[in-house]
Length: 149
Image (tube, rainbow, N blue to C red; front, side):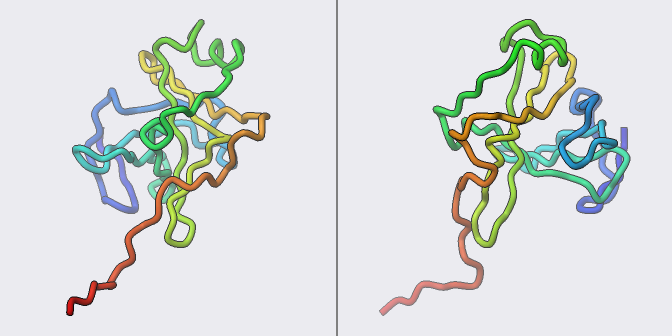
């Protein structure tokens, strides 16, 4: 299927790359269908593009790529809502933002995905162990060249 994006124009997306969030994403309750677009062959980041709004997309990643010890308590009702009885067959992503020259991740609002059905839900964690702007990495400065003697 071809979807329109404001960043890439029209792109062909495989049916297996579509995600459905029956309750939407926080702040975007009416946007329920997204396409997961890989940004590069070996990239840790994906675009989660709204299917019906070309201007709406989130950068997401698997938080364990940056924080191997990232663990969240998932309630049984959250699993049930996406068609799972346990975490086997699930994938967790977090939304990434650029704040200044830093990439941050919303570790308090992870996205839980049923890999088989591609149904997802955004969780809201109550514990304060994680933040909504956890620093993942500093971006390299543009236009700065090292001097050599």
